[in-house]
Amino acid sequence: MMWRAWLRPLTWLAVLLLATVGMSWLAPLFHWLQPDTRTVVYNRQDFLYLLWLHVELVFASGLAAALTAMIAGILVTRPGGRDFLPLASQIASIGQTFPPVAVLALSVPALGFGAAPTLVALGLYGLLPVLRNTLVGLDGISPTVLEAAKGMGMSPWQILFRIELPLASRVILAGVRTSVTINIATAAIGSTIGARTLGDPIIAGLINGNTAFVLQGAILIGLLALTTDSLFEAIQRRLDVRRGQSSVV
Image 1 (spheres, rainbow, N blue to C red):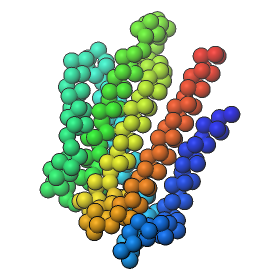
Image 2: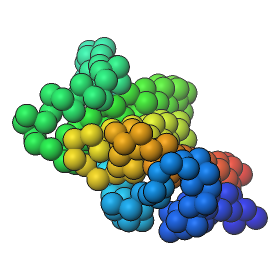
Image 3: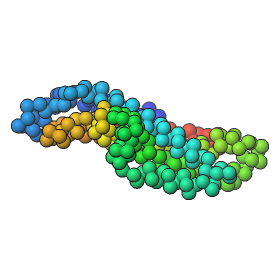
Image 4: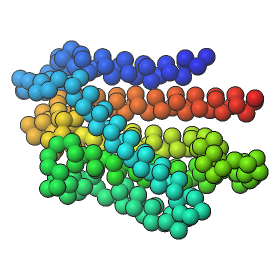
């Protein structure tokens, strides 16, 4: 039954929402961890509001990185773009290895404080996994399949959208999954330059020496990452089932 594939992400989502709206219920535990502190539950912003802003930031940067990397991967695997393959790989590698904190520091003078520099940093950081998997997925398609498609009279665009991308979709999705999951944790650094994220309680905890605040932000970010990762896993399983059904037909 296919509903079982969605059971895990729905379970993690329920746990995430419960922890988000019910963090105050854990106040006795945080008081035990931080007995000398009067305020042990972060209350400068609503956790649900921070969760929404965090998801918005990750979704926007992930979508931009995925589209950019996929388009670049498609272009450099075409006959006319093969010469640019090393350049595309190098640019994506620079984006992955360049520290996001450094990107933030360089972006703030031009973009100001807030979400914009964070989007730039996350976008650059998320390029490499998607580009790498796009290249692997497209280059891994058997030449025999492509020749058969050409023999059937399909145009290059038809081959791309009806043959190549469907066959490479699982590998590409795995790259998007890696990119988004990494950026869920990385997005927390945006709070250092005024972006509202789940990193807010972490930064506040580090500044004030409040371990409870740090733990609250870390718990919610971890639960969000688990929810997102299990969602991608369910989508990948669904793609596998559809591919198996189409092969049988």
